[in-house]
Amino acid sequence: MTQEQQLCDIGFIGLGVMGKNLVLNLADNGYSIAAFDLDHEKVKEAIALDKEENTSEAARVTGCFSYTELLSKLKAPHLIVLSVPAGEPVDQVSESLIGAGIQPDDIVIDTGNSLWVDTVAREEKYKNNFILFSSAVSGGEEGARFGPSLMPSGSPYAWTRIKPIWEAIAAKVDPATGKPIERTKPGQIVDSGDPCTAYIGPAGAGHYVKMVHNGIEYADMQIICEAYHVLRNGLSLPTEEIADIFAQWNQGPLDSYLMEISVDVLRHKVDGEPLVNLILDTAGQKGTGLWTAVSSLEVGAPAPTISQAVYARSISSFKSLREQASEVLTGPVQKSYSDEEKATFIDELHDAIYCAKICAYAQGFQLMKQAEKEHGWKLDFASIAKIWRAGCIIRAVFLQSITDAFERNDDLENLLLDEFFAKQLNENQQSWRKAIANITLMGIPAGALSSALSYYDSMRSNVLPANLLQGQRDYFGAHTFERVDKPKGKKYHVQWSTDNKEMIKV
Image (cartoon, rainbow, N blue to C red):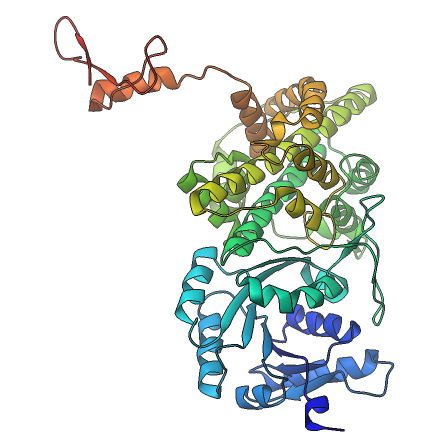
């Protein structure tokens, strides 16, 4: 066997849960891996796990214990995948690879949740040392092992090398049904179906799309959690019954990964007690939801439901403050409901969740649309919806409907304007309103559900009270305003401090 034949196809740095599973996924699909981690025990664990799962005699994963050794065991030009925390660790690894002798035509793929502007800066910073390519990964540890959704961006040349690898390891969707093709066993591969990966665009575009994916994920999770809260505290339903309701909902338009796992969480018990009752009600956030909310403000694309989901996590973290407030602040007296009233309310809540989810996705896609204009990207929104149909955390049955919407009109400004989604909202908005009214009377917080309704009502209003707002701004700050009865672009100001309040054209 020649030296070239003994060299590995891909280098891999970072063997945490995600990294280790991506390595095994790559190995299942026929690629030999040179694996490295600063924690040498993780290298040994990855090799041992590969031996357990590998049915062939040839080793699929080769352990490396330095950056220099890693480069020496790779075919040239080198292709190296990073699965390290976003931020400084990416730069530390990059500098270490430069010191070890990486070459300008070598490709380094950052698969972490890096902030997209950092990715743009890094590509420029390291362009004379190696080709930095980014590919955000969604799907958690199970997705990494058996097929994630991958959002690559950067050098088009690098993509030509990476594409066959990414298409091999990505989740697959049956093109006839739009449903995921299951892959659940080590060694199993799926070589048919639509791969849940596609080139997104220039440096940073893939990480931006993944950031918005995570923002939608925040909103979707919060919507489900608010429904759980209403059923538990408003209708006083036992946890097992709530799980049954969620399971039933998951058979229809609310069919999604997040609804599915919520059922599993609700049904899991510890010593006879539902685990969910034992989990402390405080949540953190890793940054991507916050980044999405900040970006929506920066580019002027409203994403109130995503932002509310971030705020909900923030307020949950003030546990002791909430405990104090609960002793001094009162809410409505809880009423009891007949079985018929409960059944009606549960149906209305279902429709409210469906409508709120549509609005959350609409906000995310409008944000990407606005970012596309801001940064000169050309994003394929039908393709983005397609690669989210399987493998990723927000995979849901109606992503096929989103794909269809953008295939009907690739210039669609907002999902609410699509004929299918407009019909869904129009038919269900009355139930949505009744649900929000009842939730408010129950005194249960539902910021995501209610903000989505406010977003819907704002979008369908051809006149908003910003006319008064502009008058206020002109009064205290001479900010000027336009008039509906005058040519667009002409500015006016009222001299409010004068007796006759003369209006002048600016």
